[in-house]
Image 1 (tube, rainbow, N blue to C red):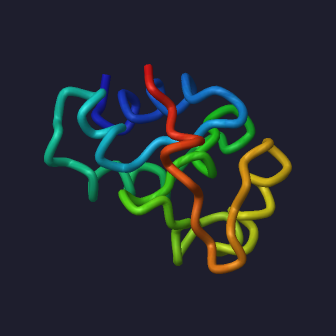
Image 2 (cartoon, rainbow, N blue to C red):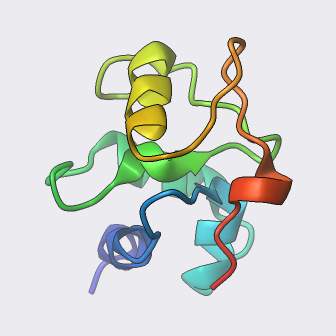
Amino acid sequence: MSYYDRVYEVVKRIPSGKVATYGQIAALTGSPRASRAVGYALHFNPDPSHIPCFRVVNRFGRCAPAFAFGGPDVQAQMLRADGVEVSEDGYVDLDKYLWRP
């Protein structure tokens, strides 16, 4: 299994109404210093319908400025539709919405 495949398997586990951070995904794949690699993997998500990369935000809870599937406004809209509150400036309250596996 490739590193990207491990990332996708973890991201599939993020429940609706929750978010995870790139660093959190990296740690859960066994590579805690690979948050950038997580970002690259999600940028090339082969199946966005089943791999909910929109649920991944940065360590501050910010939507991705270069969200691969339409930009940060699209990511924010997807998160809101998923039950996550996103501020007007694109931030999620991690105390409230962070996935804690």
